[in-house]
Amino acid sequence: MFRTIEWLDDTSQVRLIDQTKLPLVLEYIVTGSHERIAEAIRTMEIRGAPAIGAAAGMGMALAALESKARTIGKMIESLEKAAVTLNTRPTAVNLTWATTRMLQVARTTIGSVDTIIQRLIEEAKEIAEEDVRMCRRIGENALELIKPSFTIQTICNAGSLATVDLGTVGAVVRVAHERYGGNIKVYSAETRPRQQGARLTVFEFMKDNIDTTLITDGMIGTVFREGRVDCCVVGADRILRTGHIINKVGTYTMAITAKYHKIPFYSAAPTSTVDMETAPDDVIIEERDPDEVRMINGEYITVPNAKVYNPAFDMTPPELIDAIITDRGIVRNPTEKKMRALLSK
Ligand code: MRU
Image (cartoon, rainbow, N blue to C red; front, side, top):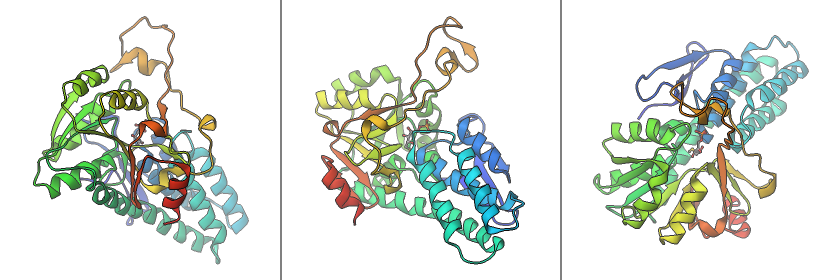
């Protein structure tokens, strides 16, 4: 559809869509500052696990260009600082994955400071291109599970806007839609409090002429009971070796409800989202500003000092997940053994 984030070769800057303005205004942010990229990630001008991974990669390349370092040691120091600055959200593993990968490239490049800068620019562009290829493969692999005329329930936005190009759930929907002559339909849950489902998923699927129905999060049970959907496909911010998936808050409730109604529940994500290190209890779930819950479009919808709990993500255990769809293949009924086998492919 469009590139969520892009490296501009002619000016050595990064261009990204400001997702806080969508769907009413399509506006781009163009910047040469890694601190501005960090701010864009923090304020969710760019969001979605693979997209913030790509942004962090490009942020590291910008930090190298911005650095005044004249020695390799000093350059590595400024990049280590930039990695800390860019890691503004704790849950999606793609952020640390991208900054660690960029630091590794800087540390292992032989040559001058300028060679490091050039290598980091190439690597940042490669992270973005890899994401495009991985999403396409996710969509192709999902054809084993998604049949013609399927209606797919999703939550949040794991479409183009959450990645560089096609999306993860976006790829599952778009590739099947393409392959089956345009008869895939989507139900999109609004996704309180930031409304990524309403603002972003509906916007991008409608742009691609995919039949999309918006529901509020509380309507999921009714939609399932009435037999309106054939399966659920959600994204993931982190997939653990145990097969747990961490995704937008509301995913867990959807998975429990799907199990009750015997509706298959799938998560689609690139292997860059897999974290083989962290145990379920050690995952940090981001808690965001209480005003995100107290307000809609800048207006209070409750008592202004109402006590609020606002976790941005939740964790779904493997027993509720029928399959994880990745670029390297499908893992049915995920277990640690199967996750290890997937990563060794
Ligand atoms: O808070 P967000 O909008 O960054 O949360 C995004 C999600 O939860 C997505 O489902 C996830 O990142 C997967 S995107 C392909």
